[in-house]
Length: 274
Image (cartoon, rainbow, N blue to C red):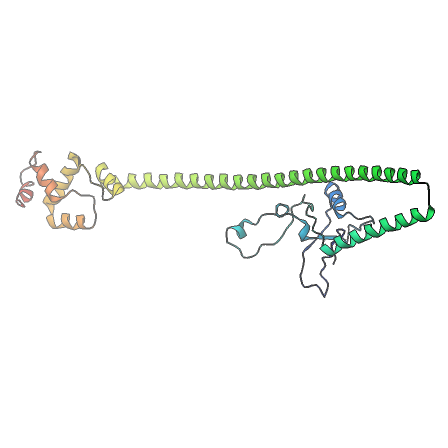
């Protein structure tokens, strides 16, 4: 398999050390014209069998492999975008030299022919002027073609960037949606859990469980239930506190016992610890 671009000798023959990747001509007529124009061939190209090697395509012409860029995959297959076309002219140096030699030889043959025919000096100068004018016109046309090709390439690159940005945007929107669903689910489970805990603990004790080791200002409702529990079994009360149950300390109960009215027989076990 050989590259169809004029002046490029890249191929995958037996004697070729480098194994190139080749891409077949597209079926889209608009993109196909750009491929044919880039080849700069004077003969007709069989687009069904012809190929162009990978060195003529810019990096923006290939699809991005996000898994490879994020390090999730070790393979990065080079896959062209559907609307990509070649833009890089990397003909080997030997092909360029051959073209220069052919132009120089053609000029020498033309000069020899003119000298043999020995035309008048004025006619020779007029022919040279006409030839120079024609050559200048062809150079202007080629320059315009190059500018048009450059603009088309830039448009293609920008379209590729826009598609990539849109894809990233859609992925981020999907991730935001997933996170919102997770937050709503977590809030539902938290509210459900707090509702079930309210049958056992007070509101202040539930807040203590939520805040962790943060210091808590207990309310009378919390102190009253804690004093009742402590008067029932001081050992059980201490065991529950060691197991991180949301209960005030014994000194806190003693301080509160002096401020509130407690039924007879309830406050004595607490006061006795002084």
